[in-house]
Amino acid sequence: MKVKNYLLQFHIYLGLFCTPYLLIFALSSLSFNHVSLKEEFTPVKSEKLAITLNKERFNTPRELGEALRDSLQLIGWFIPWESRIDSSGFLVNVRNLGRDFRMTGTWGIPEIELTTNSTRFISLLKGLHGLHEEIPGAPWWINGWWLYQDLTVYSLLFWALSGIYL
Image (cartoon, rainbow, N blue to C red; front, side, top):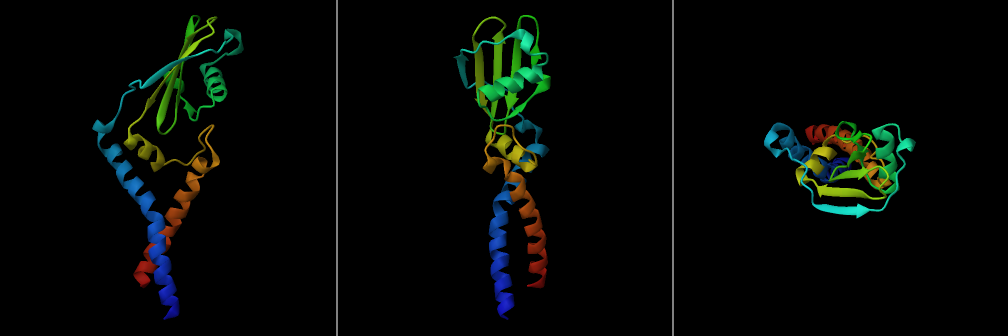
């Protein structure tokens, strides 16, 4: 009987451990099923930064985007299909779960414009839905999300089996 009580306590606390992820999983599923929750880039904050860039140093938009992301200490992924380099200037986009960064500038002018926007809360949840990779520039506790996901999946399996037994 004592083992059954310990199993019951463990079953209860395991359910509490899994609850946040299950709520995130359920709410983010709404954004996959309802296309109307899609969002557009609407600038929230725009600032000018003094950065001198040499056009010859960067061959591809990815090199420029990753260099700007790292030098400005931004967190997120470089978005190649929304970025470009040409002879007059550049446009670089970096995106993370809760914010988009758009950087534009002209070669030879020591100033770039950094425009940011905060995405909707549902986009953050949608990103957490299946995040199983490292976010460039993010601290360890954000990049440890995959561990919580995996522990939750295994906990749910145990939770279901122990619930059947109880």
